[in-house]
Image (cartoon, rainbow, N blue to C red; front, side, top):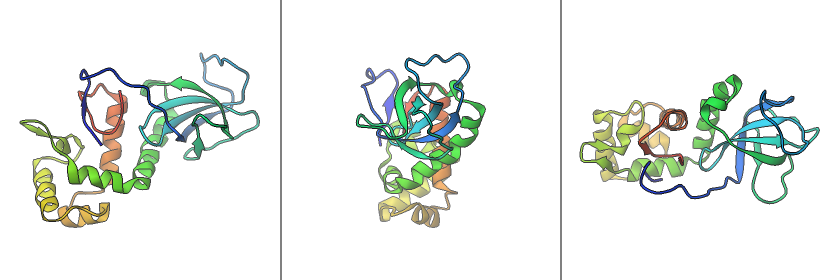
Length: 193
């Protein structure tokens, strides 16, 4: 986990290996022209960098929200090709409705990584700590987290909740990820620009 100020450096090319289906559009998306003939259009969120993508499904494939699909460089069973990155605004209403639950599912699947964020988070400016960028964590929770992690690093979300009373850390992180995807954030904790 890291924090990157937006103007710090040019974004490097990153690739997702796996993604989760946000929406399956059997007849495509209005205004979207496909390069090659394929099946339906699928809106996805990447498992590692939370990249929002659109892809063409292979002919005859039907996917449902929260299905995990391989989108890496090798042979893809369900996905014919990646159309490209999309913005939050380009997501369908259904995709936006599924987004928070699927992000939470990804976070819980990578729990140790995100618990480590709470163990290692540092200030971003002399007046603001990166923990404060998480919705629902103000100064009081921030100091409780810092005090508790100095005694002993957190081992799980349950341990974090038990020792600090922070409500549902996975949901709070999911809200931050959505904020980073849907707005122009000066500081990014979990997504790439």
